[in-house]
Amino acid sequence: MATESATGGSPARTMDLLWRTGGDVERRPGPRAGLDVDRIVAAAVDLADREGLPAVTMRRLAGELGVGAMTLYTHVPGKGELVDLMHDAVLGEVYPEPPAGEWRDRLTSVARANWDLYVRHPWAASVGAGRPILGPNLMRKYELELTAVDGLGLSEVEMELVLTLVGGFVRGTVGGLHEKAAAERDSGLTEDEWWAATEPHVDKVFDPERFPTAARVGPVAGPELGGYSPERSFEFGLARLLDGIAVLVER
Amino acid sequence: MATESATGGSPARTMDLLWRTGGDVERRPGPRAGLDVDRIVAAAVDLADREGLPAVTMRRLAGELGVGAMTLYTHVPGKGELVDLMHDAVLGEVYPEPPAGEWRDRLTSVARANWDLYVRHPWAASVGAGRPILGPNLMRKYELELTAVDGLGLSEVEMELVLTLVGGFVRGTVGGLHEKAAAERDSGLTEDEWWAATEPHVDKVFDPERFPTAARVGPVAGPELGGYSPERSFEFGLARLLDGIAVLVER
DNA sequence: GCCGACACCGTACGCCGTACGGAGACGGTC
DNA sequence: GACCGTCTCCGTACGGCGTACGGTGTCGGC
Image (cartoon, rainbow over all chains, first blue to last red; front, side, top):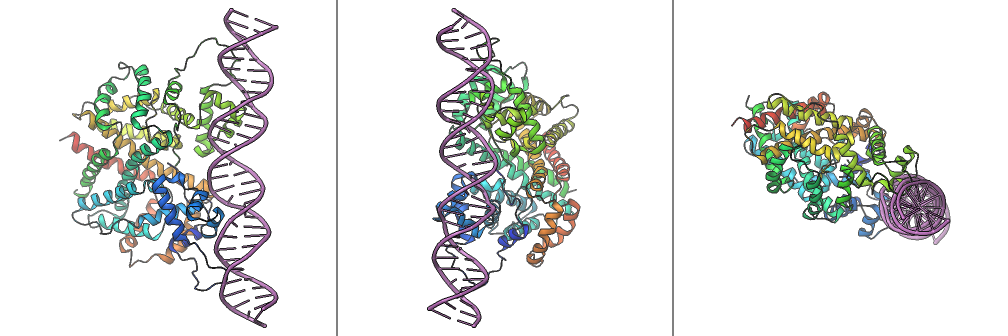
């Protein structure tokens, strides 16, 4: 899953774009722009949602917008910055209502909101895993998530670490879901087709005496989990996390 | 973080290569090969370890091996397959000794072994997150990890899910470590330099009244965690996971 | 020596992001 | 209205990527 972020770009420019603080003078010389950052970002998000992040090339995006590829560079300095902008744009969707209820409910809300976000925008799970893209929507999301773990007797550092843990868990788990989709798209083979092609060779090389535990577990877990079940992993993992965090909260 | 895997390639060919079962006839017509899969994979792993996965291009790799780029295709069908082979190669390093001790020790062993592996081979954390690359070393690793969660009264599915949870946690957390390194390499800015460039803008747009919890937590957690501390996250998260899994094991 | 199989690899292609500079559209000033 | 500076748009070209294709030379079997 490609992570693309501002690379070699100016952090200052990126921040100006994220917060739309880049000198929006009312009247300025030069032609009226027929395009703006918001439209570019929205088109890019739409394309990424439909076909995945790799489909978002400047040429493709320009085509979708009916302009030349280089036109985009009038408004965004580069591909990486565009991806950052896309990321912050979709973060604006989370928490129409702030997380509420008991702490477990609130943390569950956080996990689910993140999960749902990444289900709607699969590409976003792999963006923003590095340096934080400090846009307005990320800040708001961060604030609301902090309130979800506030008042539990956790130190500031622990609050941060809990959010990092839950956020990372969701992102990592939903990544499996998207990898399956990407593998299918890229290879043209459904999971069943892939397994049909692969299994004969597994049967040829798999030695139950060499791998006794796997020989016992695989045939049971495999069919039930369908090779890998991100949703199942999410439910299971979230329960483990909540139980683990409870030890900390209720000490 | 780029995930590259067999894409559009033949699963059968990939499996043959992984297991080196592709018809190794002793004497065959044709010139003696001056190159083989093992050498290509080793050179690719070395290059990826030194400069990251994006540096592993066919041209670069061929240069390192002193051959033409197209020569590589005599031995591996494509870039994606090569990455799969690289992945399985490095998995062979884990568990010189099988995980031992109490279940917590064993699971900690599993987590640390994976962490260490991904510290040594940062690129590997993002490979294999999709369809499993079912090579001999992955099978062995899987077997040994299964034994680490065996005999605890967990069902086969639960065993699988625990390993998925721990494995995903490690991979996701170490990913942050590598994203920091990649961001630094790509942007040419150290984290401090990036923050020095970014902070003035954060100060300009950050409203403590709009983000009161963040205003309280950030200044404390930030300096202590240095923006993001993967190692700290690892220790904290592992403890939460073990506590959470304990509820399951000791019920 | 002939033939088929095979290793090697140069050329070329399509795709990618983007540097660079030309052309024309604007608003302010004279 | 003309001039000038600023700005939007975008074509061309470049270097980078993976790899299709086919030519050349090396082998072993007959």
